[in-house]
Image (tube, rainbow, N blue to C red):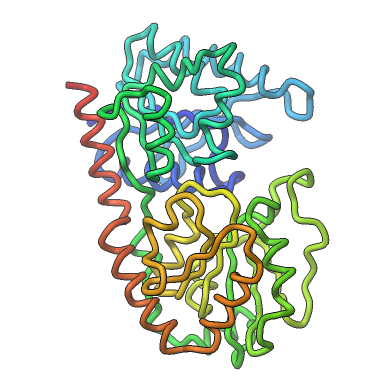
Length: 372
């Protein structure tokens, strides 16, 4: 049994991003295995200390709404780590934001192993965020990490390209809850009735944050070129007005719904899943859709090419390729047989590679190496 400190900027339920959802999934799986997990994150107006499914959540105050929220939260986090890190065996940092440097400093002082998970690669990724600040930080947090979890080949290559030793960088994917996300065996028509969705049209589904980098503008622009046999269903929320997709309104052919914790209901009701994103690490939404046996269309971002066998378990298009996106949508809408065969292979692939139990096995093994 290990005493594990998860260090992240935010955590569910107030945060619905993929990295936060993955942190929650990992924390709860580790608790089920007998470990003690504490999560330290920003309060964002919520209760300071709570227990959620056996995970202790410590939400630290920060200067919300001020011009220096990062600095003030960083100071509070430093004070917490200075007094509390000694009570933990491992520090596990999620995402390489400013807090990784703070955690790395105190892990070094108190001789605690530091495990860092990188969430996104590419020009909008974790390492890209760190590099412009490297003249001040010298990539301290990244270089001090004892193990770095890379969820995609892209992230692995970026870390090694900075001179990080290959044996410190672990290829461990994101995981998913197999009990929740699996092919649906019930009545799709009845489920659509319950969700107030069309029963007689092909449903194309997007789930996630309504932000520009998810490619929703491209999707909405091409939708008029898609056959009227289909309806587009968007389920999610915008985290802030600054990054939100503007003018996202429902029409006869576009249904917009707010985020729900029962997202599997929409996946089970849908026929096709689409992810037109410009930046991903390893999309939780894509994993969940594949696990539910949906035919998927994704842009060539993050781990998508590792997850999808193009033409067999899904279709891949280039980011920003609106013509290619429309063609892929129309191809799948026109062929229920192709959708079914792709969905079966997608579900089999996901079950074999991305279960949270398998991911937790790999993380536990890394913890064991660090403690030995």
